[in-house]
Image (cartoon, rainbow, N blue to C red):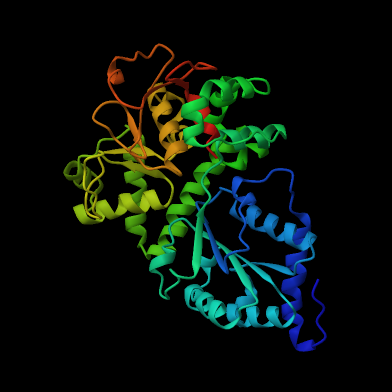
Amino acid sequence: MVIFVNNQLQTMERIFLKSQAKIDNVNLSFKRFLFDVDYSKHRIVAIKGARGTGKTTLLLQHAKRLTDDGVNALYVAMDDLFFQDKSLYELAEKFALNKGEYLFLDEVHKYPNWSRELKLIYDDIPGVNVVFTSSSILDIYNAESDLSRRVVSYILPELSLREYINMLSGMNLPSYSLSEIVENHKLIARELLKFIKPVYEFNNYLKHGQYPYFIEGVDVYYQKLLATINLILELDLQSIENLDYGNVVKLKMLLYSISTSVPYVPNISRLSEKIGLSRPFLIRALNLLEKSQLIKQVNKNSKEISYLSKPDKIYLKNTNILFAIGGDNTEKGTLRETFFANQTGNFHHITLPETGDFLVDNIYTFEVGGKNKQMKQIKDTKNGFIVKDDIEIGAMNIIPLWLFGFLY
């Protein structure tokens, strides 16, 4: 820990004491997939994600790993009262003077001049590396100061099925690339079946496995998730996008309208009239809900996308949000498609093909259904696959749906 000898630095010392306490108390028994990313090659790294995905824990775990290796690291929450009369730049200067190496900044969007001061830190204080978290809504690359050449950005989505099982069981089951799953799904499934009952875990995960709240009990899970959704809409969106409360209420109405009939094929004129939003603002509202990680917009493969174009289909971002808003009446087919769109769409490009349900990376066509799903819809499709629910292991081009929960 840094030792201060100047009495004028007592406030700074408190920052270090708080940081050390938080770092010491973080648990390393379960780590998200981004924990294994090597940030050392980049001076400024951003970790973006929605509320509840574990960004703060990930930041503290990185800090703990470094401090355990003798690296001088400091964790700071950007809404700390320290910043009432001190700047982030001042903090970085003092940190550098005390041989500081890694500065971990949590929720940087809560600090008004974050982009300008991060640029100055990058330019003026070469010995300090910065890793920061931010809301998924924040547009880092179009911020006030040009960070596009300086920052490397990573997305932390919800827990995958694999991470849920690992967190619950203490196991360390591996992830697989999409090409590995497509080419070797039978061997992979057979290996995983030695350790888990995947269909059982999958059905629990669909209801309450995508946010770490399940550790505190499934009986309060939806209450916590709905509270998180409200905070995203009422606090994060309002502060970052400067929306008035009336528009926030309309965003809630829009989210509820989508949730009652997903996968939703939007009629923009009818929806605009129902919610009371102009067409341009409605398109913007849909984009904001997607940035907030509350919905997923999907378009036809042949369609040219522009900022003002409407999506061809809308899903809620994940199945847990479906259950939280819609209850247990959610249709099974909707759950299957939402899960597939979520797990593949986090790190792959998904569109709507001419035949089948999803085209991924313009290579693989997938038709998603139950265990009795037939091949006829994609029988003549190149790289076409049937994805089946309620099976443990597939054959040929039939892949179990749960296996796509092992992509990250």
